[in-house]
Every structure is written in structure tokens, then in C-alpha cells.
Length: 273
Image 1: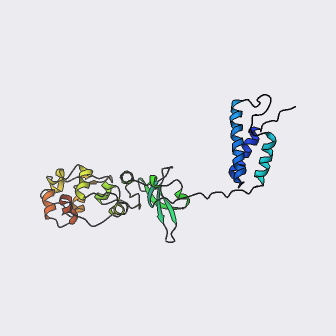
Image 2: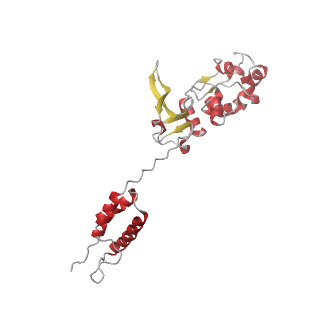
Image 3: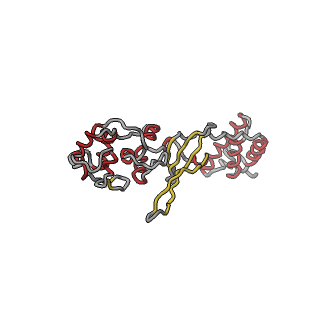
């Protein structure tokens, strides 16, 4: 007498898949699970027959065919809908290294724009032109709370390219040049923004070196790559008369410019990018 053959690996694999995808009777599913577990145990041991017979409870080939047929007759389980949460608003950096702005439209949709830099040929030199290109929902791929741009990253970008990563505005105010972004964007994102004194400390080694220098001799090179000094730019920047005698500190004291006063006393200045 031929011993009954155990279920094949192919049958077992197919039955397990069907039980996970079909809406089968719970008792039927429980019975299949018990016999499949026995099959796994004895198959792993590599011994199907005990005294010439199949071990009790092991799924046999004929039984596996019947179980598969019954499972196939059951309706398919509905596929679970994938859960998705839009990334938070603000600036992000994706896996490709792109700077992405996430925002909400007037209709309430969360979408994205990508900051794109283009090399432009200018008179005698090449410059970078920066614009935001609409990326819609596809621009949100891979973004999350973890990809939000930190103020340190925003600062590094601004110092490298001379524009605010959040709005693509060129940085002209010394505080913004030092910070790497402007005061409005700093306020919107909760990023720190320096006083004029702090900016000058970082840009040129501190106010102390300036205050004892004759006003007409003041020079320094900003992060914008420009040299300010004897041509009057540094004096004009702080509202001081060009070519006047006296130290920089004395001219600041005489000036009525709020930016000049802020250089020494840290007063609040009008907001500029």
C-alpha cells in the first residue's frame, strides 16, 4: 500500500497566500493553520513517514488541493488603503539635495516648489539666477518632518549663494548677509536673526576694530565679496557723511541713522531682506 504523499512546497506556499488574501471561514482558516504548522515542522525535520505512515495532522497532498479549491472560492479581502500624511510646511531638503518649499494653496492643497539655480552669462562673469519652479504633489515625495531645513542649513546656503533659500531674495543688509536669510523669513520659520553689532562681529572681526579707525579709512570685505571702504560705501551704508574727519565711533555718535546707532548699541532696525 502506497503511503499518502504530503503536500508539496508549491501547494503550501499557494495556500498560505490564499489564506492571507481571501475572506475564508475562521474555523476553516484555523484548521488550515494547524495542519500547515505541522507540515512546516515535519518538513523541516526531513522525515515524512513514521512506521510507514504520514505523521498525524500533517497536511497531505490531496487535502491541500481541497483546501486550495475552497480558499479560491472565497471572496478577496479588500486591500487596505495606504496612509499618507503631507509633510509640514516650510523649506525642506530632499534626498536628491534639492531645496523644496512646501506650502498650502488657497484651495487647501499641500504642494511644493523646487528652488532652481541657473548659470547666467553676464558682462565679464557668470552669475546664478534663482527661481522657484512648481512641482505640485510630486515634489512632496520623500519629505517629512525629518527633512525640514534647519536654520544652520539655511545660513550655509545663504552664505554660499548670497540669497535667502526660503524666498530667493538677494541678501543686501549686513545682518541678512551674516545670517544667510532675511528678518521676515527668520520670523516666519523661528530662525535666529542677529543685531547689526552681531553681524559686524561675524563679518569683520568686531566693532572694536572699527570704532578707533578714522572714518575715511574704514574698509572691510563682506560675504557678498565686495570691499567697502575709502570710496565711501561703508560710510554711506551707515548713513555717515563721506570724507568727514574723526573716528568711526565719533561719526556714529553724530549720525541720526538708526542703522548707524544699531552698529554700536544694538537698537532695532527697519526690517529689510
